[in-house]
Image 1 (tube, helix red, strand yellow):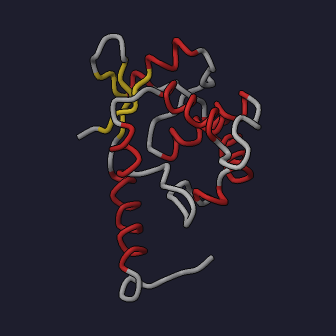
Image 2 (tube, rainbow, N blue to C red):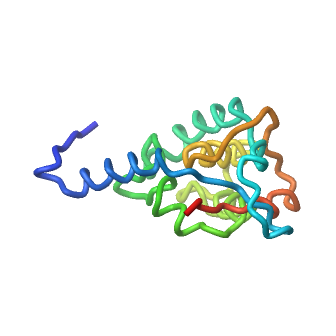
Length: 153
C-alpha cells in the first residue's frame, strides 16, 4: 500500500478528508412508493453478517479496481462516500444491484452468483453508512425498487 502525505499529494489528502466527512454524514433509506423518508425505520435492508460476506466477495472480485474499502482505485471509481451517494441519490437499491450484476466484474460481467452480487450490495450499503438489521437483503426486484439511496442533507 502506498502512503502519501498531504503536502505532496493533495488528492490523497482530499480523499482522507472525504472519508472522515462521510463517517460523520448520516445516510438514510426512504421508501420509494410512499416518497417519505423513513430514516432508521428502513434499517433491515441487509444484515451485518450479509455485509461481512459481501465484503469478502468484494475484496476478491472488486478491490483490484475499487480498492478494499470501496473508496476507489486507479482503475475504478469510489463506491462509497459523498461522490457515490451524490451520483446515486434517489436511485433504488434495485438499480444498483442490476448495474453491478450486469456490468461487473468489468472483465467478466455477470460471472458471480446472484447471491454474491446481493452480498456485495449489502457491503456497499454498509460502506455508505446505511444501518443494518437482522434480516438479509433479498434479491426480490419489487422490494429492491422500494429502497432508495438517499443522503441526509
